[in-house]
Image (tube, rainbow, N blue to C red):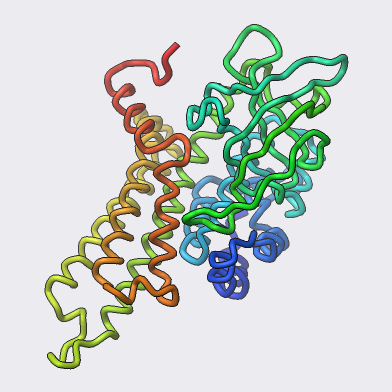
Length: 374
């Protein structure tokens, strides 16, 4: 079943966009938007038909994240991380949770990055210890989107056994031992609830394991990473499209009265707007090609996946910086919306895997080196 664009548009126009400014200014989690997206079938987009979902694909999810990012970066990030975690749960999770996600009643998220290994998510410091039929998890996650708001976390740890770099677990957010996250007061994406989450003596059944013990890295690289990287690029493209439109609107309406000109008639301003359009189109072209490589099984699919987040993240930083420049003092006022885009754009550069890590992965891939050492 294809994405219901009309349902998405209704939620964006009636809930997400009108609340975007207050979500940003007050740093409030976009709970109303999440609820309405669930009712509209958007949260369950990637759920398969066997559990009541539409069986949506990555291209459809990309359109959702792009459209949301154009309205509210915080809401887009919450949904993006939900989709990334859903991909694991769909592949390895229990039917009951999968059905709840398909019905739009369950919000999930990833809990990978840790204080000890930072953005090197593939080296978790947190531990898992067998305790009869249960498992005890201990760890300190450095950043978790929707912390304290999601219904579950896809949690990484060291393996139970001696083999493999990590294991993944489905941990309900109400589980005893999970410490309440603090409030998030960040530069951008201020409503996405991204906070540390610590767990001490978190006990889950052994059946909460997602995939094989020690096989979490294979799941992360093969299932999660393509979804996360493509949707991160979709986020950046959606943000760029919005800021280009806002800058063009401002330049077309603001006037230099003493010269009898609109700002768009000034060659330097027009050139900057053109540069913004070119960079946005380049990022979109790479995103579209990446989706095409995955859909067609092309040999360069893995390389495109590694490239797309870093390329789009850096483009969005450049485009929003140009928007601040070309719109001048007006861009520093919150009502124009550009300074919010400027702040939100910076997050993609530092979200693991960071832009620096990804371009190193690209260099390794084209040199025939393994992506990860050791």
